[in-house]
Length: 438
Image (cartoon, rainbow, N blue to C red):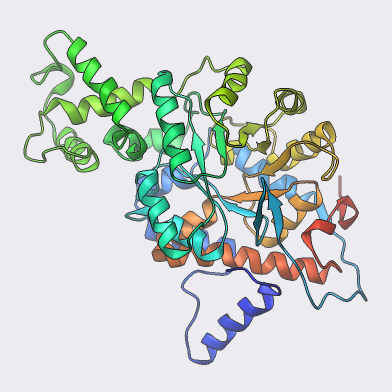
């Protein structure tokens, strides 16, 4: 659990272990963390988790935008006690960080979502359950409860083309104790991702990352309807089902990742139909602002819109009565050459007001890898920051403990940066702590 003066405590733990010859399993700098994670992951896993859209310009822009803001420390202030805690949707959190949803996490580590949930619970931070997770949300919630009863968790929603499935997912999220519903807006279709494309690798086509669906009774009703409506049922003979080594491997993967599938019966229609159904209905490109309004009728949970980059969209979100927004370009994975999340954050805060003045909570993600990055986001007006790739890299290295340590390192640096710049709480941070270098 994050405590007051967490940074110094974290340093002491690392240095004390060093006296006994033990070095951190999870590197404390992002560059080395990324390097070791790449060595630990498969090519497919690295391509999916680390890759970006197109030529990677948006990922580069995310970093460049942060570098255009310099931190300006102040001195001779009593910073012996520091407080990182915030209030978010009626819940007090020990720090302004959340574990972002990352789909198909099992590409980095088996039982990824359960381990990430445990890591978040150990720190007392929310985990936003991925709609494209590799474990049912109920299993992740149960694991978090075992670590810390009442551990905060949210749920990310992709709006399916079938509203029955949307309703079912929302109902399940409510029953698992989700504290907010995060509607993701920027993946109504997949972006152009060359690292995946060059490997011919789409995890979902192998049954990876669709466990929220295959654990949902409404989803299986939809699959059954599609099977019943198919003339003669799915083909099992020739054409697109031609046998090859790659096809056999894919069928094994589908069977392994689809509950109830029989490994010995590679031609059984249900597992393949489940994958195809997911691919056909997982997200709806026709999603509109009217759907956002209708979402309020479906749930009493706080509604957070993820993927806001334009100030006009932020104003529209406020007008529609949502509770929060996440300024995000999906980690640079959807549109190549997009505006950075940091630059968009500046515009959005100007549009909806500074902290304490606005009616919505403003969160941000994409490209925030260190404690100083988080400091800059908070000083620019964000209420909290969502961390993605760092916790996935830690997960790849050491499971739940690795995911926890990767985020703990960010928290420690944030705490130290707050103190070393002359502040005693994250609530104090504003634009005066930064200098625009442009």
